[in-house]
Length: 299
Length: 139
Image (tube, rainbow over the protein chains, first blue to last red):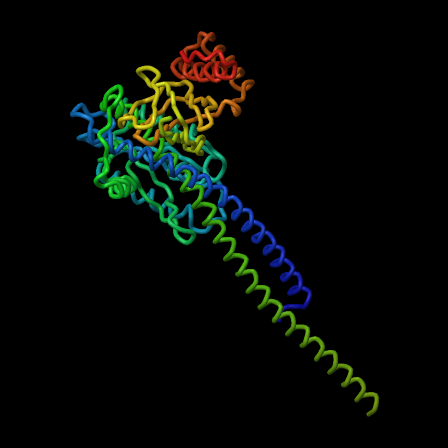
């Protein structure tokens, strides 16, 4: 049995850890609220944008934008990998990286070269460890405060590279925020832009508005409008992914820290039990000594 | 008096305006246009400029928009802009600083200057400054 002092100091250690995990839990909770608010404020824009885009896409003529055309031969695949900067958020980054890795293998097996844009330190570090080519890295974005211009600047860079045929396909790997309990990693094709009607939110909008699709007059022309909207659509997708990943990160950390706090409680309980047992044993020992001594004197 | 039309100016970060108004004037790519209630469905891209609208009481308001799109429906105008600010929220000093920075960048005869970006930044800053000064011209 461990000595009294040892157990005592262990209990104190665990208590300190618990304080930290509890504090981290609360910090994550408050950041989560901020991230969720940002996500909610983006919804009206995203929905309206999708609606207008769906509307225009139906009207534009055959002169399709190069952003829509799938390349026949896919040689260079670019992956935009969104992870968090910090750890201690459970399996969050591991899940994302596993997803990215299996997706990358799929592409490599198909004979493509893969390069990365890394948002978040964890993803960047992983790319470095695996000796993958990193085109761009952005730290202090995911999980922090960022504006739409962060997304539009980096998305424009990716679009330019795509138009220069440096990439034939661009995919996003990010954590979708489904609920507090589930933030699955997903892969989404960014470029060439997939058939617009297949995007989920657009489907919903279209369904809601069935029967009500006013014929718009377009200025300058549907084609010109579409050309302007498509790059913006990429910004919107990237911004959305950044928001979702940030929210997911905080939710994931909150849960991980909650579990850690619970584990600390369990540990403290079992250690206290051990402590009490040790103390009891010590008392019994002492008593035995005293009784033994008294008996000897009397004898 | 004609009916009012609902004006919504939305950016990715927030709702900037959501108000019932008598008339809305916006800077379309092919020129400024005005929208009254009962407008035929209309869709256009916008250039950097100012949106003017008159609220229910007849007071006029100015809003800066950095380009984007506008959709007019008979009862509603929606403006999607990457950034938009009401006149009273425009930071004049910041716009001025941005203007000078852009000017500096254009003046530097360096190879790696992204002229299109610098010019766009300059125009945004200039438009903001114009709105504040009330000199009005968008171009």
